[in-house]
Length: 288
Image 1 (cartoon, one colour):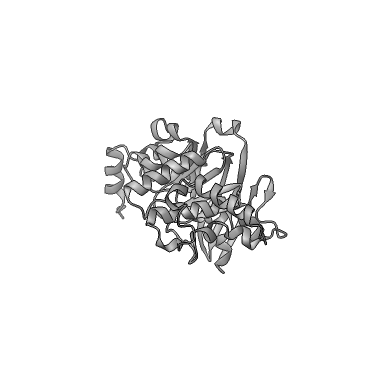
Image 2 (spheres, helix red, strand yellow):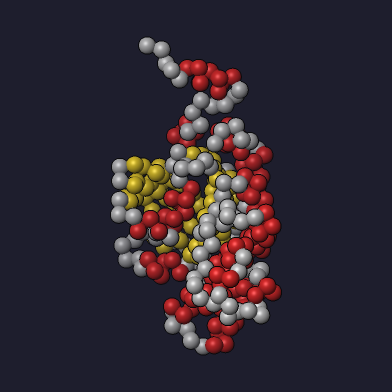
């Protein structure tokens, strides 16, 4: 019996594209040596995840450098957002999820049975694909985490509000209407408000799941500038489908495919001098 995949395989080989881009991931990830010189704030150790019987992540191991921006790239369905959501245990909300392996935040296991998940999430700010300001004032959006912790001192709240809004590069736009609804802001302003809310708690890691996908180019540029400004003060782990955005904003880039980590290294190397042909094919637009 003839193999119906032979014509497709031959065509892919003719243009120099690997017939199975997932083969490199199955061989094991390519981790660039420069990552070993970085101090890790977050360590992912042989982490696997299943939704019921469907396996979404396969033995992912990586060290996220402190004070740097790391981008997760790869085709839709490759496990980027699943991995990101696993870092602050948002996948716990799905009954069918099962995991193996571990993650450690500054040496502390994220999945230890004794971990208080609410306290864990205070250590990691989360910015979602779609901005989600609370239906309350700009001021109350920003200081929400402090209110939850029982902080009532007005001077402290005012200082954190201003510092966070300045840190999110939106203070000058909203300082005269802090008691207006956060929902009254434009889409780009709402996303920066959400970033201000996330950094108000001074998280150890800032997680971003495609933070610019719903924004126009001008708002996207402002958020990208903000990410660059936050680097150093915060460790940023972000998911993006935008190759140009990853190359502009990140220090390190991890390419994922079929739930596996394929290659992880400095962003310039991943885009200009990748070690794996599968990575080169993806970043050059030849598949995905």
